[in-house]
Length: 177
Length: 211
Image 1 (tube, chains in turn green, purple):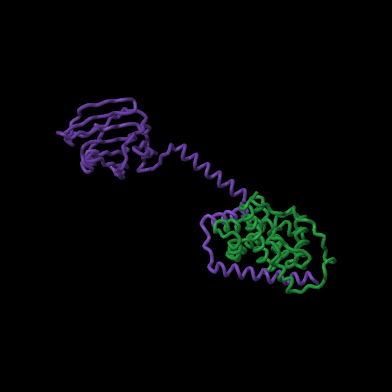
Image 2 (cartoon, rainbow over the protein chains, first blue to last red):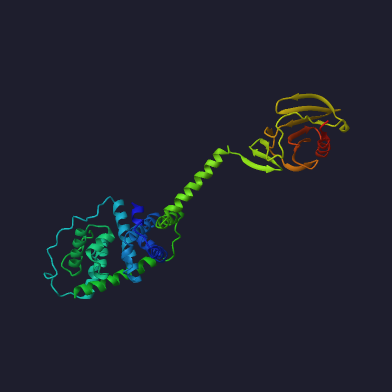
């Protein structure tokens, strides 16, 4: 399977981009993974897995600036580290158990400030925050997020919906996805 | 409107998270050899390999391997018109490109009486003649053979030197006080072995004549 992914790196520019990304961001990615896993070997594995996924989606990196490349690399490795941590705890990702929120943006009261949104971020689980960042901050489409985070697109939609509800104060986060 | 606020909030939170990670782990990590090997393999696998070059490389390795197998795990060395097939403990020596090779043993050579050595015994075959000589406690064996014959010579931990006997090319091997000289002359291959040193062996070899 790995060789299948790597065959997608066709041009010399893509290959050098992958190596550049590794050289530039490996320390940051490692530190992010360590902050989640607190284990050097596992953090290294997370970095390695992140680059497998980056290679799979390397064509999308061409469209991003360096800031976006950094953000994506961090989000990917953080997502992988969270999955590794969840597997260790024998807890499954609650990907499909997200209850449909009955709140829509229109139903949420409009009175909320930026500071309140900032405060509500702490109520987001790491997985929700990752998806929300890619959608709201980097403005990726749900399909792109699904491919990059290797999650179902339905899960992406659910996470976006729930993250918006929590951030706008219409729903309390419970620490899970 | 709220999406813009959410965007700004998430970006600020993202930058803060990176700062916290940098504070928690201020020093750069020294990646393990295992990780570096994984990444190296990942990047190497991403390089396209020319199928043609790969096939050429495999074919070259196969030919080299076959050549080694066919050679019987030995080496070939040419020393002065003699081909040495060198094995771990001995060498099989044959004459190579001998001028006007003899086709029979009609002409039998001997060590001249001038040497002071006396012929003790002689054994002849279709392709060889082995003559034993003695002088006091010294013994010599002169073997004359057709060039097509092959000799097994003890070359383990020995040095083979090139020599010339009566203008003819040959080789010398010293063996713990004994000598072995071999040369090609008049279409035959001669081998002289005995408990003599190199200089005496060369003198005697040069007294090998056709009576």
